[in-house]
Length: 511
Image (cartoon, rainbow, N blue to C red; front, side, top):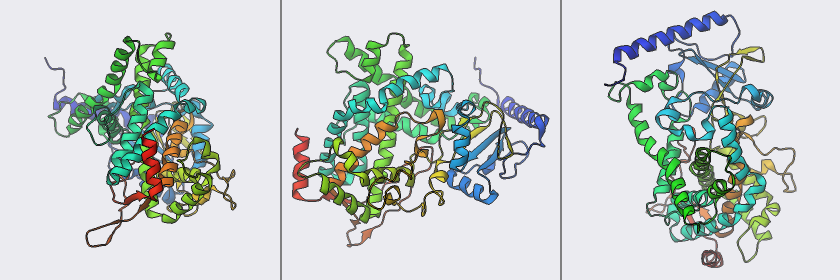
């Protein structure tokens, strides 16, 4: 006997929930001043005002139009607040992190797609604290040094792949990032770049699911969880079919690598990894928590690196003067070898490029949604408990008062006149999240980005692609839209800077 609701029952439930939400809002006091925003419609509120693409730009425009750091919508009784300035983000997520650290329930992502095991989306409770503790201790600033050999190994493989088939640079970036994450987490190896690999496929599809479902409100079921029970054939229930496809990859990422690791450990001849270390040394932690935390490291460990390195290639194609300046810096520090981690302190311009990548086109332009767990006030506005609160990282990182000419890729903004890192211009924090929910893997991600970017600049020249008629192919510089942001495919020419550079790559790959 099916326990699915009939269409009539679904419609009746939606009407009842909506009416109840409106009544509750009225009883709580509609006279309280709330942040400005578009005028809501009866029952559905601002459902039709939610942007379908590049939401961060729309919310930034609303903030300017209304002259407010915070803008508000209400959909089926749920308030959505968007924070558009660094000052407001610090005041709320930083100074009041105790009430801004929860996550809203997201039925599409967490329950239908099955990504509830990822600690980034867990509610702020003891389970989340345990997962974050496991994750943080393995990717802390001190722990990151333990992974440098693996990062160097995979970077050398990446350079060789780039030398052999430079037009497949996006595929090679994904291969390197997934290879590093999988080896460090589970001591498993991916197939050579260009060959089908089940781990890379699962990670890519799990990240795709996060991208498409991670923005609260993209699917109506986030506002009305009862819709998760409608049958897949029901009108407007295509989201259930989408979720079913993503769920397979989510389950693979959450279980298969961990199960293979346990099989290897049973032989007692396994190669140590984060997962094996946790299983062997911490018997007080539930195995499920270890599996889920390790899966989160694998599934999302490559996401920031893939986006950032593809953005780097795009930036070097569009701003050749930046590439030339970085190469001059590297040539003064490194001779007859590839850059290594010990060179980083003497390459401030490369560091500035990494910071500018995160500012210019952040991986997560509209940061993960927070949920306000108690009533609050800001700038005279009443902020209701239960509100979903989005930090608009894009608006914060493109504030012309902080970053003049924000749409231009300009690493010099982080440097003094004599080329040193400027202590008065902060390393942007917005690309990595806010408050207690800030990404604990930041040091690991920037470490992988540094060694890849430094070695690419040392050995390759990135220039315009030319079509069959001899015309320059201009990249669109467009990005996809979703929680995670990636450049759309583009063409460029990537070739060794010299025969000596090519020889260094071949030699390094044979080590």
